[in-house]
Length: 114
Image 1 (cartoon, rainbow, N blue to C red):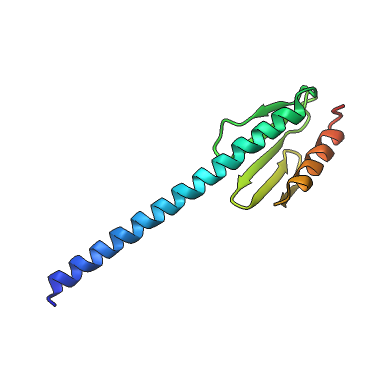
Image 2 (image 1 turned 45 degrees about the vertical axis):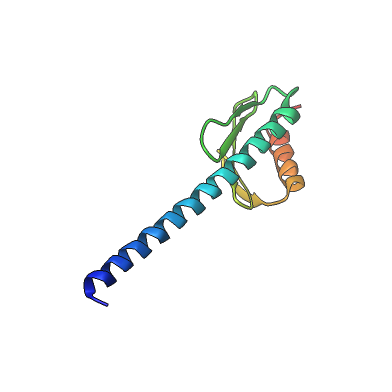
């Protein structure tokens, strides 16, 4: 096989590898956005009577702002779980929906939401 053919084969293999990686990244983004939509609906349903603002404009991220607005909780949606971070510090992760709910309730309670 001539060098030119070998170079062409390598170039094509690299293009195929890059295309596969792009497809996988797109699938991950789609999965994260689907989980985010599911979480946003869950939060809207559960915060309906609490006057908590829910901001979900950024990809993979939802922010809860209690009516007192002394702190905010950002929830980062990941492939296999969630990372919760408050503005005043503290960062925790969970892959369990019940634990997520408990951490959100703890945050709301600490910020005087009734």
